[in-house]
Image (cartoon, rainbow, N blue to C red; front, side):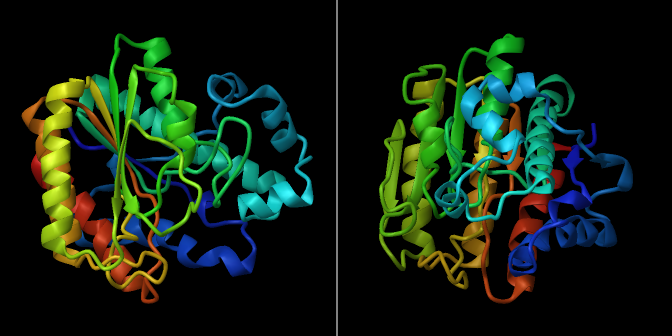
Length: 302
């Protein structure tokens, strides 16, 4: 069964000019994968906007109405990172539905699915933060818990920034275990408490990074016994990343992804992957790292 890939051009348009890079990666990644034959056109699907009912399964009604009616004040918009617009809200609704639909397909058919965007892990139930208005992983996780037989979910957040919004949303929900490995001295500077946080020192190398990941994640599969995994596969852990501050190479990032996928395969657990962050000055480094994640999945799950 071919792995589904959520993608639509609304990921990059219409955004303010200053925000187009690195947002343009959301178009370039699938173009590269189609060009090299890693994926075929029939695997690509375009999500429709998430319904209000699905949004309200995770986000507060008052907050959603502020987004819907474009009523965020200037302070709230600065916290989000974007000037608020109807197009931006629609973009978030489509991104989030890509993760939700991908998770459903991974559970029912394909065992693995991708969202070319997604990973909006800074969004709280009641507010936006860090370029995230709605939390795609949280919305999709709640959808699975409320509408399927899934009883235990593991969120593996390996973006360089802690998944603070996701951690807060699920802080009192034992059915969702949140695991985050992130830069100790990086944004967000006020961290939330995940079920397991692994703070990383600046400049950490491949060996030390992978050792921490392998020792902690291997036991989590045994202890948490998840029935579904969401993987936030940010490539801002790269040594080339202008915001990341870590020292992980392209090979190290690829080994990270391979280990996560192997664990899911070994335990026969369906997997939804969202791309998360990536801010290297040369976009070729971002595209290559993200493309490696797709290449691995296509070779391992099919």
